Image 1 (cartoon, rainbow over the protein chains, first blue to last red):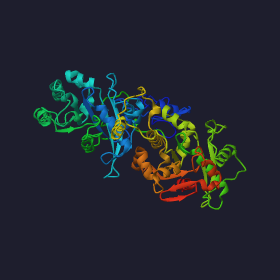
Image 2 (image 1 turned 45 degrees about the vertical axis):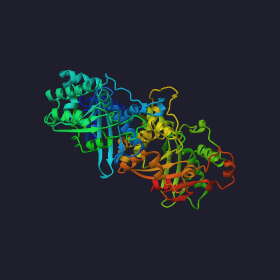
Image 3 (image 1 turned 30 degrees about the horizontal axis):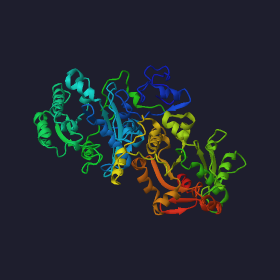
Image 4 (image 1 turned 90 degrees about the vertical axis):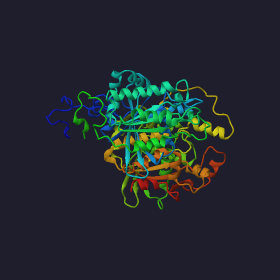
Length: 321
Length: 281
């Protein structure tokens, strides 16, 4: 769009049929039209989490590292994200400094129930609603060791019920294109359920079934890097009759190591039970962050476009000046 | 000048106006010619400051409805500086955060800004989040029971978001929408510095205080140095807490200029124009 406000074909903003771009809300051109017509307010980005439609608000600006978190309902996906953000509010974490986030309010919503202001006696994380689209949160971090290196991460926050549907039905699995696009998958197994002898086998079976279905439908393949993360590990520490190496590491290695590009295992206790000497807030997140920091950036503008959005054009990359 | 409510902007401007007008010999700035313009509101603020009187909240905003503006000249270069304070009350800052809009007027001002002073109140309990997890740990460490009498669970609202998040959010607006103005010189002013020193000792530096007390903001600023060139100042414009018994009379008994304290790295001065001098150089 040249400076006089006309396009290459000589049409004005209002009459050019191809002139619009996606704002942070996924709406077409509203904020820019407000500016162009001289109305009162200039709209700012909302700061909430993103969905598949408006994620390009972030991915068009930055090369982003996608971090996909998946697992059963209440396994700890959202708690992991909320804890990471709250830890950064206190200090740099694992030699990583907070460098910004276009989802500050999205993070704050998830953190609220961990805080005194919530009026709660115990920290809590609200369940991700099933009826929500897959949501994404953006955060950028700078490394202490490489001062000039700022890394942009996009975290997915997928409702556990969507995970369950996908594990049980291949059609639902195929409808999670985010899993196909992302090369690194973080699969979270609920450590508290594993600690419960009545639920242990069914929990591990559910995880196995999901990964098997994802491989059989081609959602995961030989290029997939799969992290299997056992959450709430404070509930498993020292548990009689449970051997983590046998029950989790050897088991999943035997089943899937040859079918994926890389299979890694992590133990975390993002928000452990209080009064536990060994486990502090964010336990295990440092190793996980190191893994994510070594991810390659997705190429700009194309790495995370999970859906073809009608009308997307290259000129969305440009802004009127 | 920007910052949330009750972060010292009014005291700063009041003291600055007086200092510049009365301290020709030492000030880095002089007042612009007073033959034009309406200084009624700034004069009112300065008088309140001189009398050690708190300004009523209803009087925080300029009755004319316009921004508070102070026109100065640098002594060293003769360069004119317009110090524009569009939101003395700090309520506009909060409203922008919640509504996620700027007025067109504000937007165009921000695109032309060459430097900014951001004020922070060190005594604001909402600067950082307080986690239930940590609170219960502290209570246990002192042999007390963890929180067990909640006042009632609340739902999330934007007012509960910590100040450091709001400040980062604002600076991200500047980054995203005010590109021509970048890199921007940003003076971070920690107000009520006398109380910070009372609590932590006189050797504490403003940047170190910010790193510990608003860590998210500090990390953001150091990670985005290509967009924000920062310097940190501790400022006490009032010189003390007027509400504390005896303090007001002590302050009234001394030269008003001697009430001012500015900490710039390791150096102390009563030149309240120091932050402005740096941000305009």
